[in-house]
Each structure stands twice: as C-alpha cells, then as structure tokens.
Figure (cartoon, rainbow, N blue to C red):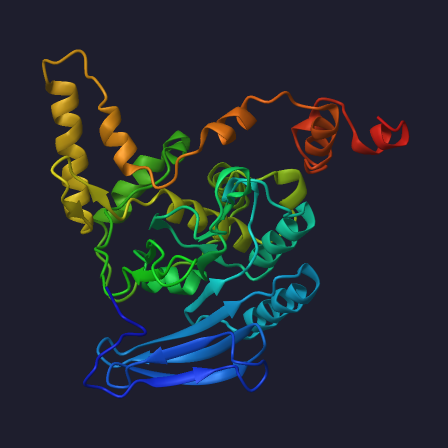
Length: 376
C-alpha cells in the first residue's frame, strides 16, 4: 500500500487548501515531504489539481482532489473543469478522487433521495468525456449517511476514485478501500495496489482466429523463424481490419450502430474498464485471512473449487448468522414494508421515461416521442 498522504509525528507535514477561494477551505491536502513531492498546478472552489512524485518508487502521477457542490448548477463547472484537464493530459497517469456529491445511478442510493436523473446523467457524461474509469473497491458500498433512522435514513455513494487508462497501464492492480466512517459522516478512501508490479500474463489470443485457413500453420512457421533485431511489422489487410472490428464488437459489448463510426480508442477504453471491474484484487479465506497477492488469490480459487467439485459432500447449509455479521446496513421493519408497497401508475411512468431512448424499449416498437404525444 502506498501512502500519498500520511501522518508522522516526527515529520512536519505540508498542507495546502483552497481557502483563498472559499471560506475555511473545503479541500485540505496534507503530505509527508520526505515521501512525496507535490506541485499544486490549479486550485478552484471545487477542486485542487496537482502533480505528485513518489521519492521511493520514482513515479509521477497527476492527482485531482474534488469536493463537488451540493447544488447541480454550480457542480456543472466542476464537470467542465475535469473535461478541460483531461484534454491537456496525454499519457500521464491521472487520479481523480474525493466527494463528488453526485451518484451515477439509483443503485448507489439506499433510501428516499431527491437525486434527479439529470444530475446522474451529467456525472456519467463527465466520466465518459474525460475517459476515466472507476477503480474497484472493497468495504462500504455507501460512503455517506445522513445520520437519520427509519424512513428518513439515507445512504449514498458520494465518494469514489477514478483513473485514466495511463494509470491503469502503470498500476493495473490499483484499487481502494472504502473504510467505515469515524470522525466524519463520510467513509475515508484508502488507495492500494500502486506499489505492486504485475507479472506478465501468459500469451493468449482470441479463438476465432483459428477459423482462418492456414492460421495455425502461419503461426508455427513464424515462431520457428529466427529474427535478428526487432520483429516489427505493419501489415494492413482488409481482412485483418474486419477481424479487428469483430473482436472489438464482441469485447466492448457496445451498440455498434451508434458507436461504429468512432475510433477504436472507445472500444479499448471499454475493454479496459471491463477488465478492471472483473479483476479480483482481494479475497477472504474461510479462516478470515485476507489475500491480496495475485498468485495467492489464484491459488485460493483453485483450492476452493478443487474442494468443492472433488469433495464428497452433496449438501451444504448456509450460516445466516455469519451473513448478518458481514452486513453493514440492514433495513428496518418500516423500510421493509416500503419494499412491498404497491406501485403507482405515476411511478411506472417516471421509471419508463427514465430509460434511454436508444434501448430495448425501441426494439420492442415502443417509441418515447409517440407516447409523449398521446400523453400516456
């Protein structure tokens, strides 16, 4: 684990804030000058953008700490700022983290909230335009609570970490821990995996290539050939282009009719994002031991399924007491009654019109404009 901001009583910590732009300063950044050099590049009312240099690892990284406004209108300036920053960042690793005061979708809210679809859409569009990827995390799924009970209880995931593709190429194991709140009503976020060197993966290729006549023979002949120097070839064939497009379609799982005329960068970004979501960077054994090293995680998966498939037990019971101890938030009886409450026609209408226009709804022949015209 790498500490970008750590506390050491024997070292005088360095502090920077944005109090020159807003009273009391909404963002405070502290760091240990013996471990990290920080060069503040830009300061705004909702963000501080800086370049960091880790003295131990000799690595650079751009970091933007944000504290989004409570209101949707002022928050739009933050989204535009992130878009502007992304344009000037080419291949340098970039990490964006903090309290965005916005959620991406309804799954990040537990309770009755006033989040509008416009607020969620604007946040999603900002992430898309800046080509940032959400880092995987463990711990609390909701990072903020309004400290109320019953029907007024509200949980949200307002805090998160985002990264660009350049950062994931350097530190593919990057993730963060969403810890339990202590002195604040927000969960502290702890960055991990940036001191890990990932081993080179074994050679793999997509199996659709073997359908090409002579493919295996060509690979065998090329591998038998002895090269002197760097074997770099840039051969452009129409068939190869078609195969690449087919591969990207299958991997990215995007709507090709909508995005087909864009560059392949969109697809590689989607592929990288999917790999980050699917990556298992931490696992807990039955004994309670937490494994974080990739080789240990792989071996534990193998051992688990060997025991599961090779064992003689045909029936296993679930310890509900163990599951309850792992739950960090349980609903009350009042909240449970709301889950089975009857659905009104207005709620159905609002949910229906919240669906994107280009979705399965259109494929069923149900078009939003015609419905709106008839006032249904």
